[in-house]
Amino acid sequence: MAWHHDRLQRHAPISPALLEGTADHAGSVEIDRTFLHVDMDAFFASVEIRDNPALEGRPVAVGGSRPNRGVITAANYIARRYGLRAGMTSLEARRRCPHAVFLPVEGAKYTYVSAQIMAALERFSPEVRPLSIDEASLEITGCRKLYGSPEKLGRSLKDMIRSRFRLPCTVGIGPNRLVAKMGANLGKPDGLKVIGAGEAAEIFAPLPVDRMIGIGGSTARALYSLGINTLGQLGAAPEKLLKSCFGVYGPVMAKLARGEWSGGMRRDEERSPVEKSMGHQRTFGEPLSEPGALRGKLVALAEMVARRVRRAGMQGRVLTLTVRYTDFRTVSHQTRLPEPTDDEEDIILHGWMLFDEVYDIGSNVRLLGLSLGSLRPRAGACPQIDLFDSHVRLKRRLLYRALDDLRDRFGERVIARAMGMRWEPRGRDRPGGDPLETLMR
Image 1 (tube, rainbow, N blue to C red):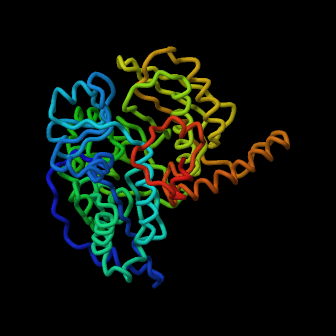
Image 2: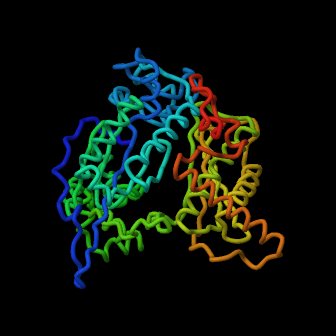
Image 3: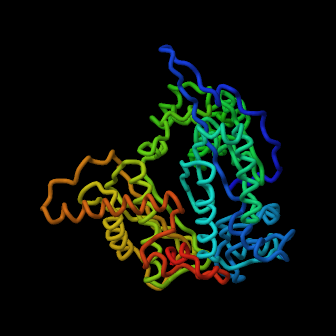
């Protein structure tokens, strides 16, 4: 979610070259691809405001409903004007905005709404990839004949979400997924921003380097120390300088700053070129100390990590667990797996082993994180191990393929292990009798 409060005007219409394609030297036509990124605005808070119109116009925060415990999971844009943000303690949030409305997290309700939205997006493109509970990427290259232009498609999509779900969203459109995502970030809230082919570098140039996807706080500080403050400066920086300071990551950052995405974003290349590991972490609205609940959260994290690794066509061998307690002690522990894997059974088993080794029994946990590193391209077949084990792994791989297809269509949590869902908070207002809801629970 972006922290930008001013509603941006939409950019100029997308360039004809992006829509029509360009001829190559052999006389054939190479179609320039077009992508759309949809990002729900302050999703959790927007769902709560939709379900309780009395909250309209008031600062609303989800999470941290107990005065001296918990952290904020989401805040609407009115609350953000007072400095409220995800990850802030309830105590600090109440100090900054004592008149805000603090609501408990209704995880099952948000997941249900997300699955409905992801399914509805298939009306606009056959290529819909949910990226999180409130974001999705669509390839809309071949959709011009239906809608006239990418901009018209984006407006139709926004209108559908507003009328059908009564929720605001921001849409970004560009020649690759990176530019489309950045367009959505720049267009928030409730906006539409189209960035045509060849326009990204100019639009990104005045932005501070930490606005770029993939550049975190520590990397941004290192860039600032070199006198590189904006994405324009980063895109024009000498490759030799960047490589000497950041290794192979340096030239990649310069390309990102210019809006270049060299990966092509095919399904087997979905992993960002700057990632050396893949992981997920979760900050809890209320601290957890029950070992069973924490193990359940690890199951859900392992499912997401394994799916992300499989989607990228990779396997990893170094598993890292991060535990942060309510006193802000943070412990990281890792292990080297017997062999590279993308199998969530392996990740769950070794994640639990790491948890047993580091968990301070009875302590309240604020955050759990799990990541898989030492990534390499997936081997074409199972390793040469005993026949029975190979057969079991083959069956599991076929199962994961089917599960991944379901999650591509309906979102990450449409189907999950019972233990991973058991400890999710139950929504008060979940509609009854819907078969999709039955799948999720």
